[in-house]
Structure formats: C-alpha cells, structure tokens
Length: 149
Image 1 (cartoon, rainbow, N blue to C red):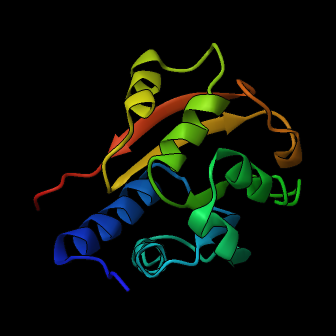
Image 2: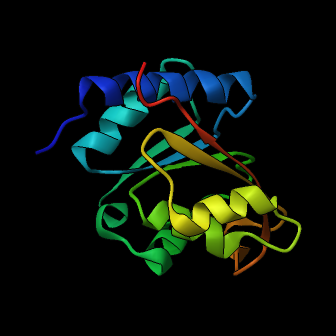
C-alpha cells in the first residue's frame, strides 16, 4: 500500500487550489480506489466545494483507456463538471483520445507524451457523458503544479 509522499501531499493540495481558482469545481468525482488517488482527492477537495457525488471505483484502479471511458459514461447527464482522479499513463491517454481538432496544440502535445504527478487536464465536453467518443471534446489546457515546493 503506497501512500503519497510529503511532496505529493503538497502537490495535491496545490492542485485543489489551482482548480478552485480556475472555477473548476466538480459536480461528480470519479476516483480510483487506490490509496494514493484517494489521498490525492481528499487533499485537493479541501479547496473545493463538496461535489454532489463522489464515486470510489475499483474499475478505475486497473482500467485502461476503454475501461476509464466506460466509467465516465456512467456519469449522469445533469453533471456539468466531472473530476476523474486516476492513474498515468491512462489519464493522459484519455485526454489525448478525447481531444478534438479545436484542442490547444501545446496541451495536446503534452498529454500525448504523458503528464507528471500533480497535473490535470481540462477538457470541454459538448455531448452527454455517455456520448463521449474519440475527438469529441476540446482539450483546453494542461496544468502542472510545481514539483518542488
């Protein structure tokens, strides 16, 4: 059972602050059941308003691309903002696959090579969560928290 390092704990809290500052407050959170992802979410959540629904998912723990998309497809259509707390390289792979032609080129290049810990991608979705398909979203940005605080 790996837990977050002290630096990882600081990064998680900073990610929460960065998300709150950007107005990225989730309606639904999908979080892998792994200890580190649960700790990450708990720390970043201290900066965010409580979402209406938090789902700790065993499926996200070992999910690949299609499994992660299947979990996301279960989100109610009424959810405006969804936070997925998962694992690399799957999270950057999901962002890359969902990114359509209007996506930010620098952000797309970043997710194609993977993102470090303490990073998050912002995608705009114009369909229902169950209707997500390849290139159906716009990757707006990738935010990377400083690693050595």
